[in-house]
Length: 483
Image (cartoon, rainbow, N blue to C red; front, side, top):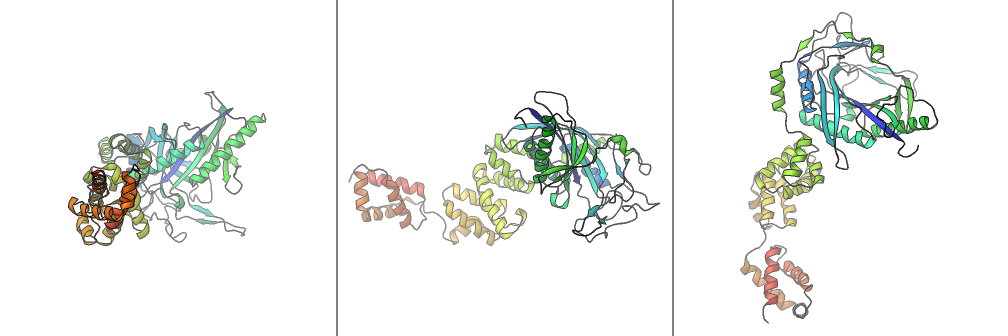
């Protein structure tokens, strides 16, 4: 592949399981991990005569997703039948949306790993039902079908062909999953199939504005697989074009073991699915006032939160990246910072000591005894010189073990508070100067670097509890005074 000769054009179709209690068109439980074929009924297994009933919570979560992605919510929408046969699709068709999707014409902002701001168009986001799952037992000449997942509510989010590298696609996917979690759409757990991706890729000559022939790589359920599949398919298409051959529109599969893509089948177009309106579900209206109430209820989303942390609070972008990774972490930071008015110090303590305690105790942030309010007490004790940083780390662990008690009270009880009294520290300074006359003489003879050595001696003499700033000033005054 000639460097820079070809430009990749990437568009992603993301399937997100909506976090509803029941399935899209029946009352079966929508839950991962149940024994095979135990969460099923005549509706989700496609039995003759069964009729679908729309899950209103799935519609609400779909609207939330559309609003979080900057989409317009169509005032009238409908479901369609998408016809194809596959063993894990019991009815022989999927109830989906075709020409009247729930959400359309969005724009999604995110930052790449290099910190570059990017914008990707959201062409549409539509509701549909999931298929079941085919299991291929190793070494056996047959496959098994588990229909527990059949009928689970999905939102398919279709981006514009606006990305041009695997790294950019990864940044988009990670930001998209983070945003959907913030909005309360679903848990987007890739290991459980809650966030899956189909990747459309084509190549064109660098500098060209025309599109090449695209392929679609299906069913990528990890960021690593998406990245690997994009790299492999870009390399495959480039090799074909370099050899003077044509790229054929096909559906591909990615083999992680070999790191290559392979052809599954010829790529279908919309007419191959023979879409027609779902006769068992009427066209339905979406109340604009209801949509606006959902818009007002959306939390601050990750991209806006990151900008606030950097632009208004002055945090380093790396700290902001970490804090916006999950909504509970950002909420904890906001609650503590509101009390300390010291965002940088608060972020540092949260990202080190609080997360350490969360990991060690295996508790989520909301279950810790070191609450935002108690962390704020700790941060302020360090800031006003009452605690050293090392003592603060010790106190963080004490606060987790002693719920409900004020930080200063525990610090005093554990003998962690720093000594800042000039009189008490002055006596320690005089004792050290008397004991270290050789260092004192060399300092006064023109070796000012020995101040740190003397400071270490006085800190040790104080049992590590002296306020270093106060102690340094008193030591300098004593050393510089006339002998």
